[in-house]
Image 1 (spheres, protein in one colour):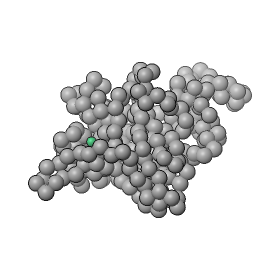
Image 2: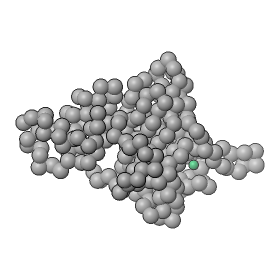
Image 3: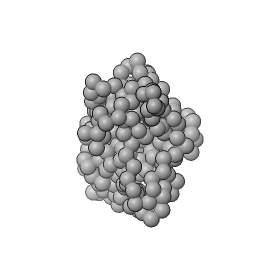
Image 4: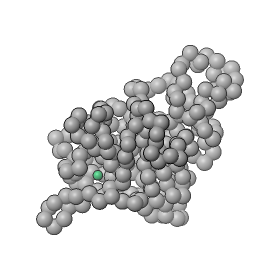
Amino acid sequence: MACGTNVGDLARGAGSAFASQTTQKPKPTCPCTTVDVTDDPTLTNITSRRYDSGINLWNTIMKTLICAAIAATLSVGSAFAHEYTAGSLSIDHPMAFETAPNVNVGGGYMTITNTGSTDDVLQEVRVEGIPRVELHLSETDANGVARMAKQDGITIPAGETVTLKPGGLHVMFMGLRDDPFELGEKIDATLIFQSAGELSVQFTVEERSAQTHADHSGHSEHKHEDKSE
Ligand SMILES: [Cu+2]
């Protein structure tokens, strides 16, 4: 169900209930679908990841009246609760910290809970406009040197919760130098799970404190649990 490309048609097809909303400009993508992602990993049709700031009425209406009704295998929580579910997975509070203009990478964090009876794996994160997104694990060795290791996937064991947080597992957004994360920005992303499939979420960009950890060298554990929940 290509909700992202058919939002306008769906709205028109939904009948007069939407007639009064047609003056709102439809967004090109629907933020709560599971399937509107190109199969091309190189993401060639990138324009910008920019998302209009503020709460967009049209998106809110679409989320509430269209996507919630037709995304059969996916239930999307309130846009304000900032929690997403797909199958037996729930994803809470995807966020990233703002980045400085000269910093090329930013970390993404969230909490993933698997209430099912089988393990699932977060295999990939895709963001239009960001050329490379990896899954990383930050570790500090015996000498106190922090480094990050690319992960092929992040397993979410059955019945367990995995928290991506500074100093540990995280999403690494790479190639940001020309388009830094700005406070309040919302980054549309697609999470690809082995079993649960694709899930569209938004990473909210939050303020970075004095502890710099959004770049490759500065991950620091236990400094932001208040922000990354
Ligand atoms: Cu990293």
